[in-house]
Structures are given as C-alpha cells and as structure tokens.
Length: 360
Length: 195
Image 1 (cartoon, rainbow over the protein chains, first blue to last red):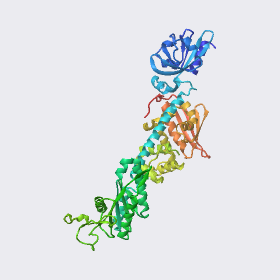
Image 2: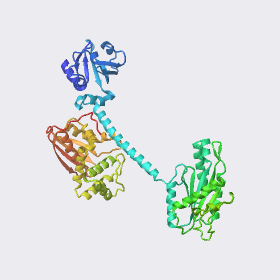
Image 3: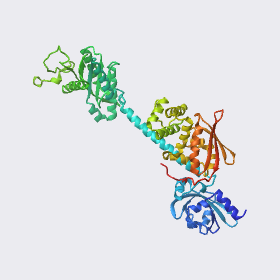
Image 4: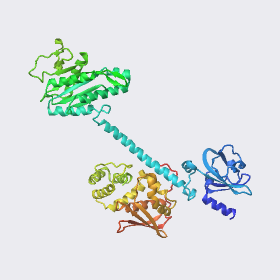
C-alpha cells in the first residue's frame, strides 16, 4: 500500500487524524481535523505550532510525545486554549520516525459539533459520536418531560394538602374539616356542643424546651382529647395551641362539664419529653346548641370563644359554659354574667351577646 | 401504551380539533381523566379507545386519523425533537429507512419503559422497501405512513407509500423511493439547540 492509499484509508477510518514526520511537521491531515483548524493551517506546519499537550504535562516537542505512544493524551488547539481534545499517538513507520496522532472530542462532543458545525459525514461510520449526540438529545427531552411531570405532581400535592382535612402534626381534624362538620350540624338544626380548648403555658414549653418538645406536647394533648371523647365527636386542632371539639347528641349539661373536667384534669399532669416535665393546662369555653336552634356557625364559635376568654380571665384551668337566654326560654330572662368559683364548679356565662356590663 | 404516545394523541387532537373535541373524546373513550401525562404508563387499550373515540367524535376513518397523527408528530414545530431524533438515524433517506429496525431500541435507550411497535425493515429491490409493523394498536402502520411522508420530504426524497394489513395482523408499509434527490431537503444541524 502506498502513502496515498494509506492516507485515503485513514481519512475514512479516522477522519480526525494527523500524520506527523520525524521532525514534527504535519504531512497529512484527515478531513474533520482540517475543519476544526483554520484553512490550510496544518500540512507543512509543526504539530506544536497548532496543538498544545495539556496532559501529561511538560510535553513540548515531538520527541517527548513519541515516548507517550499508545496512552491517552489531552490536547488543545493552540489558538483556542479552552478546547479539549483527546488523542492517541501510534508509530507509523519506526524507521523514519513517522507517527499518526488520532484526535477525538471525547465528552465535549456536543460543544465540538456546535462550534465547528460538524455533520454525520464528519465522523467515521463506526464512531459512536452520532449515537452519543442522539442520546444527549433524547435524554434531555426525556428529563425535561420528567421534570415537568414532577412540577405538576408537586403542584397537585400542594393542592391536595390544601384540601386535606387532617392536621399533619397531630392527626386530628383541621379547621377546614371543622368548618365542614359545623356547617352540616348547623344546617340540620340538630343539638350539639362546641368546646373551644386553649392550652395554657404552651408558649413557655416551646420557649424553654424547644419546638420538638412543643410538638410532642401537642401530640400528647391530641391523644388525651381523642381518649376523652366519643367516636362520633370531632376533635380538631384549629391553631397553634387551639383545639375545638364538636360533640353531637349531648344528653345533659353534666355530660359536657364532665368531659371538660376530665380533659383539664389529665392535661394538668406533666407531659414527659426527653426527661423534661412539660407543664401545660387547658382553658375551655363551651356552647351547647339546642335542637331546633337558629344560630349560624360564626355566632356559635364566637359564643364559645367568649366563654373561653371568660375561663382565661378567671385564672385558667377551668371551663365556662355559655348560656343563651334566647335558647333557654325558661331560664332567667335577666342577662347577667354569672361567675362562680372556678374549679370544680363551672363558670356560667349568660347571654354574652346581650351582656349588661353594669350588672357585672 | 406509554404516556408519550397517548400524550401525542392528545396534543394532536387539541391542536387539530380543539380542546372541546378532546373533552368529548376522553368522555366517549370513558377514560375517567382528561390529561395524559407523558412520562407515565397507561393500559394498552387506552390508545385504541382514544383512536376509536376520536373516529366516532370526528366522523373520520381511523386510518386517516392515524396517518394524520404520524404527519403531525414529525411536522409540528412543538415536537421538533421527534423529527430530530429520527434524523439521527441516517445521513440519507435510505440510511434512515434501514435505521428504523433499531428505532424501538433507540427509543428504549432514551426512555427505558417506552415500548414502540416491533419494526422490521426489508429492502426488496433497489429503492423498494417494506416496513413490517406489529403493534397492540391496530392501524399503527398508518402512523408510519404519515411519518415517512414528512421525513422523506425532510430528506428531499420523493417516495410512494402504500399500506396493507396482513392476515396475521402484521401491517406492511411499502416504500418506493422514486427519486432520492428530488428536492433540496431540510438541513440537519447535528448540534442544534432544541426547545
């Protein structure tokens, strides 16, 4: 095989090769390597006038390079120091010192193709460069589609959480759930009770022992409330340390008061968290809505709140039962605050919506 | 079939007939949902139900619609990526045709659970090709008819296409390459940025 035939063969097999003479002069260059260099800038010029060896370091001439035959080289174009080509040198004719240096874009194939506007024909038919480009593009498209799906799923998750009825920390119902239950009971005109429960001294627990302790207390409190109520009752956490109980089918005032007493009693026992005794207690405000009432949810909750504040004002750890003279036609028509001794006797708050402060 | 395929059907219907028709189609197909997720997998029969429903709602034959979907897939600017990925198959149209054998494997490289119909390309005589297609969706061969028409144009080749369904359910697409250099064709820039 003569030189011309050899060069023609190499141009097909390795279109990015250069043939370098003993003195380092390039005597032939493959079609693709010519594309990445300025026109007519290779043949007749020294290899080191066009290329720099980045790694291994310290190779400045063809003698040094020849010693690295067969191993991987990192090379850049002298005019473009940022370029990164892979290369391997193979002795071509040991007698006269000729070598073949074959180049490749390696991992920077996409940049190479873009920078030099290369096409399929610029790569050997067996080169995996095209498959590599195909994969980069296909994978990017697939990743993009997956990313969009993830974003949509995340959006759906947030929406689902907003529509959820459960308080994630305690497993109790949340305010949304409470509103639904309350609205249903109000619309049927059935008898039920609403109990607002505020934890006392909860902030002190948080401040002293940290949020983890606070969370633990809330979970323990939730557990107690669930244990002290019936299955048909709704126990909701409606704020940081605020809970609301909805109790349908209330038989008697005594029943309500005894639930309140038990909750207060149990919450007064210290809750252990990592060896620390966390002390809280509860203030309760209760409204008993009688059958056939004409009250709306907002008024019921505001009555319960008012009873709750009464408990707070009366020294905490007690409960106040709100009594509405509109509901109880038989009871005393005179609107009064009736504050009795707290614990164990419940405080009664009468008709707070038509309160007569003078008589207080 | 994979969400990518069903989602393509959704895009085609929405872009061609509008969202109302898509709503009617999913209703008629009794899907129970209206949005198809490209990166999720669906029951095999979802695609068939969608195509049947689309035919019912639009009053157009299934085969026509499937061919239209094939055309849409490789010609809509929204899915430029599909055309490009196909063009990676070969420098010339003939090379591209022969690369269709590998298409299902190539697709799986990109999306591991994407199962395309089984494809086999035979070169019968010079310039005469036969694409065999076996799919869970009957008529899928028509998708390739639509697709090949556009891709041939992309390469600047002039072709005749014909479709036949064998007794065993295997569909055949006959491709006659009349002139491989009929027109200039579209440039394929290997490193182009898509999307």
